[in-house]
Amino acid sequence: MSGSNSSTSTATSLATAALIGDAPLMKGENTRGYDELLGRMTATLQPRDCLEEIWIHDVVDLVWETFRLRRLKARLMTDEARFTIAVALRRHNAEGEALADEWAVGGDAAAQPLASALGSAGLSLEVLTTRAISTAFNLQRLQLIDRMLVGVERRRAAVLRELDAHRGSVAQKLRLAIVQEEEVEGRGAAPALAAEEQP
Image 1 (cartoon, rainbow, N blue to C red):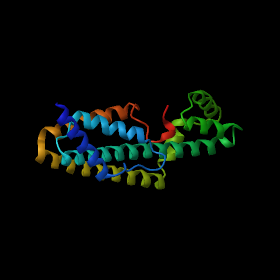
Image 2 (image 1 turned 90 degrees about the horizontal axis):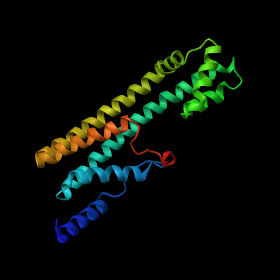
Image 3 (image 1 turned 180 degrees about the horizontal axis):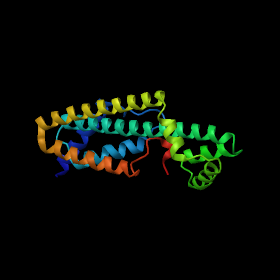
């Protein structure tokens, strides 16, 4: 690419970014992670015009929203399990609530003491987490998140159909990039949503 084309591409990107405005992030979400995701998608697809840049932003926003909802669902299940475990252990172990709290935030050191405390009380982590999630109220909340995820995926599919009509090769690259980002997210290596989760 010549210097002229490169500066035109940069100018178009800046103009598009100014037009689109700030990223649709909640307070506390990781701006750097969002920017990295947008940068990787843009580098993969190399948009040719403002319209393609806007579509890429749309898809990145929808991919980010998918990650946000999946993490919300996981956090909801973890928090409900933490509460149920704490209540169950309260009668048997003075440190039960602290163990449940540490387990919920991912403390590996708490896993074995928690398992021992539960075993001593005749309780099971699997039974308690299942009980926590399977209440009607929690199932309704999880189903609502699932419906929201379906809606986001439908909107993403609609954007990809528009891209197909405009330039099929971009849409195909974008589909592959989305699959790669979802695989990274599934391995837990995607950029953290919350700024405080950054290393």
